[in-house]
Picture 1 (cartoon, helix red, strand yellow):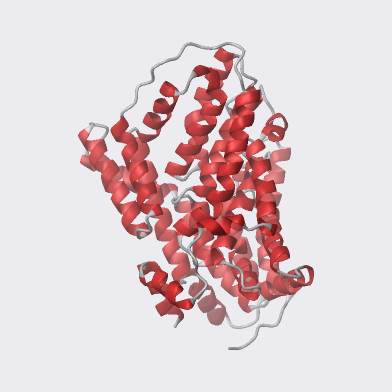
Picture 2 (cartoon, helix red, strand yellow):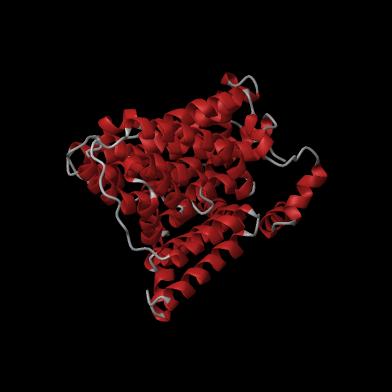
Amino acid sequence: MTSVKPSFKGLIPFIVFILVYLGAGIFFEIRGVEMAFYQLPSPVAIMCGVIAAFLLFKGTITEKFETFISGCGHSDIIIMCIIYLLAGAFAGVSKAMGGVESTANLGLTFIPPQYITAGIFIITSFISTATGTSVGAIVAIAPIALELSSKANVPLAIILSAVMSGSMFGDDLSMISDTTIAATRTQGCLMKDKFKANISIAIPAALAALALFLVFGKPETIVAAQYYDYNIIKILPYIFVLVLSLAGINVFIVLTGGIIFSGIIGIMTDSFTFIQFTKEIYTGFVNMNEIFILSLLTGGLATMVTKAGGVEWILHKIQKMITGKKSAQFGIGILVALTDFAVANNTVAIIINGSIAKKISEEHKLDNRRIAGILGIFSCIAQGIIPYGAQMLILIGFTKGAVTPFEVIPLLWYQQILLVLTCISVFIPFYKRFLPDESNKKQEDEIFENNSLFEMEREVAE
């Protein structure tokens, strides 16, 4: 195998991408445009990096194009993109048949009014985990939270922090979130194992945050309990997907089954017709177009950057600061968080740093499930606190100027506690108790054999 010489020049296309994406966001922010960091589509920004790679790197156009296409068509990238499509279809169909509304209304009906802030945190956490989208959970719950805040005289900033905290809890842990998909595909591990690696950290953080919401989020006025219309049957597809995912069933089977299950319920409850059901599936596909295209282009660019020595250059610099397994974990976490601060998108941050994290992991013999978990946790923490991220912008937008991001950020107790517990877990790896032992190759092979996705990858690798 030919070694690649480290080269800063090989990293320039990624820098071009980040500068274009970040620069456009700052430009529109200065001009006062809403959702400033989301005005320039990320696939267009990454194309600037691709063009830079073709201009800077050595070789003929044909050679560079073949390298680019080989990256776009890598099995990890294609599998990840197909999962994105299926996850989008499931989320779209389930929402169209009333699943999100029923889930929210069920929680609001049974949560005692005096615990409304903590209840909002729980409901948002479940919806985000079930649907795989933090933004979707915020859009569904924030208007309700604002109304309850007004009626119960709960400080608006606290109840909004409960919404944000719950949405990021699910974004990290959901089996069908693009964050989880990117983290597990880039590190080559099962989604359920990444879930197990993170749940032991996320649950204690969530419980601690819940206690704080109970204490500091008490309403001054106890509003009368209300009945919200819900249908328990419409919640079942989310439970179906969550349970089968944790059971280790192939993700394609789980998501396809979830789409069909939601479709049957939607048709039976007259939420849509069969033709409308198929249109909702396609709409779900379309909603994933940006991350789908971005993943393809990033895969191609990453391969070009790697071949040109850009990844090796980063590894060479990072290795000087890494002295062992503990500093390696911190290094990966800081790297993905800083990237998220730059691009304001946690999935993009994971995709950009996935191959780098994988090489660091292999170099220091780290558990790939743990690294996938670190990528998810640090990127979600960063995404949940930046004032220019989509989640914060949408959340604050509902208040129409009544609250600023800087009033909410100090109250994001879940993210703060999660960061502390994650750092502690580096020194005291308590998360390992929740993971199956993969210390020997035989057991690792059994996991590969039980999952057809990994069989495909191993055949390609061989």
